[in-house]
Length: 192
Image 1 (spheres, one colour):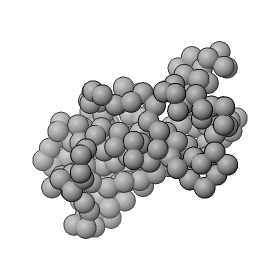
Image 2 (cartoon, rainbow, N blue to C red):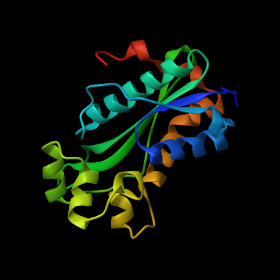
Image 3 (cartoon, rainbow, N blue to C red):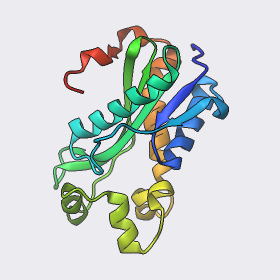
Image 4 (cartoon, rainbow, N blue to C red):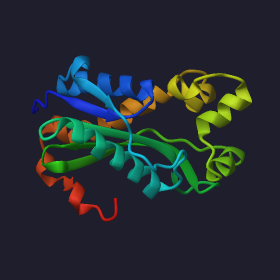
C-alpha cells in the first residue's frame, strides 16, 4: 500500500465527507485532519440521470478535489442517481465514486444499488433531487445528509452514508492494492 498523506473530497454534504474519512483512514492511513472539503465545480445538475451523467459528476468532483492535493494526494468525487439497468423502469439508483490521484489517474467504484418507484423516478427525471422528494413527502429535514431514501426504505438497515462508504472503498481498491499503472488518466476522457 502506498501512502498518499492527503486527500480531498468535493462536496457540500457532511455525510459524504464522513464516509470518505472512514474509508481513507481504514484503507490508506489518511487521518481526518488530512482530508479536506473543497467546493464542487459549478454547472453540475442537481439530479443527474443516467450512467454517463452520474459518472461525469463524480469525475468532475474528483478532478476538482485533486487540484487541492496535487500532485501526490487523492481527490474524491461522489455522485448518485438513477443509472440505466434491466428493470421495470429501466434504472437503478446507485452511487458512483471516482478517485483521482498521482499522474492524474482515476479509478471508479459503485455502491450497492436498488430500484426506485416509478413515481419518484419520473420526478427525478424532471430535475428534482431524490432527497428533496423524500423530505417533502415524509416531512423530515436534512435526509440527504443523514440516512437518505435508502435509510427510510430499509428502516435504517442501510443508510446513504453506508452506500457512499462502499462506493468510495471500491474506488480506492487500485490505490490501496498498488495497481494504479493500468488506470486511465483524466486526459483519456473526452469532453469532461
